[in-house]
Image (cartoon, rainbow, N blue to C red; front, top):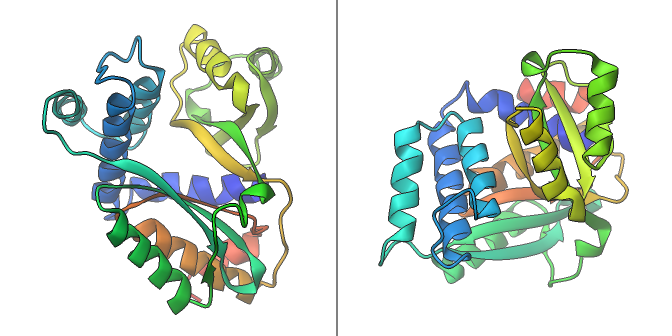
Length: 255
């Protein structure tokens, strides 16, 4: 799971630094919209857990409260934007599996964009089920270390009580907590009881095993991964690349 959190945490840092803020805002607005539309136009986060998670993620990318409130109001009204979830499966160069989650108001446009990204960058779009079996859906919570206080060992025991299966502590800024799919709500409750608000939370597809590539090959995959994430309709891209520090350094240096 280290490769997964390594890439995700880079994104969390970049979100506050570069011009991708608008893209991040659009992502969470779509997440808020779908959370409300799929739960009978329920705009109350106390009774709509999916909306509550979406609001947490909006705060995690520093979206102003007014923007969040407007998104909720628009989604609960008649005639608001209508998004649906669609997923795509395929392979990046060198046999790396990609599972792509999108939220779109135009499926034909999204299909064309995803197919083009695969075909123009040495990959291939597959059929549903062609790579999903390589992943397991888990709850993933990203916590900011600077906001965690107290005894580390006692805190980890609290997380385990809340359903933590594993805890990735390698990053300097973030702690990544993984739970079983069914324990996602339990961990939310545990963090609430500890008055800890995650930087990000959600159900994500985690690879059962990862593939090792050379640094050069890995950077090629990371470049395609970034292109997918820059696509407006794409919410998340999951992969089974084993990301190394050398890959990240070369990628960030533009090599």
